[in-house]
Image (cartoon, rainbow, N blue to C red):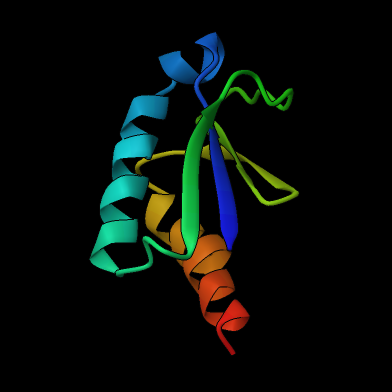
Length: 87
């Protein structure tokens, strides 16, 4: 099980956290991994960045997630993790 928290604090909110949440929901559904991923919001994770949103996947924190780099982030840090857990 992968736990994914998207920062929805004021800084990340202004940088598009609602867009990242929407992209995550769609990507999880598209790949049929709803039973493998728990999505939640979190107030400030404490790793604010000048660009993009902070996302925590289990214990790993990723900063600077944007619409432009979302697909790469999702594939590497969520999809590949789910697939490796299933083996």
